Image (cartoon, rainbow, N blue to C red; front, side, top):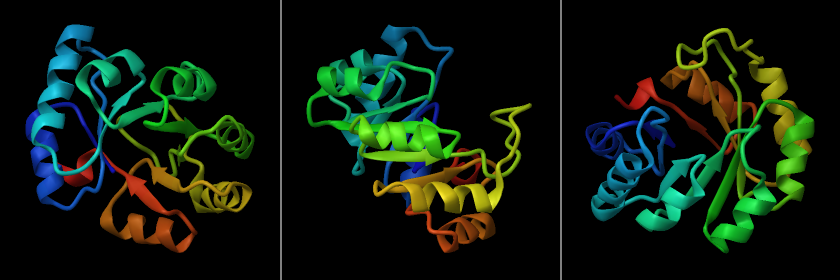
Length: 169
């Protein structure tokens, strides 16, 4: 999964092999975010998820959302989005189990390593990632400080995939 904030980043990520695009641009207004999401959806050959915004996902006809841990709950997002994709970003085994119980299609766990996109957030490492993978049945994507080598390590620890910002730029 490539986490992108612009159409250009999205195109580049798809060219580099991203299987899903997650639009994360918290500084944009709702209107600007919906326009950008609609543009991504219009040309993308992979599913487009919108970070945190069910309304924008619906308006842009995106495939779904990824929800930060302290955002609207998975149950409420599912009620709004029906059978669209609903993922949850989590930082612990307990939060991963809760997201799965509430109907998340996948969870993103991290940060596994230090990440400039989340300064001050303590990296949790591969052992914590492996514990989350063992605790749930839904796919677990690793995030945080991702490089090609680190992505391979995450897959070896049991992750179904990984999410990255810089790796796809």
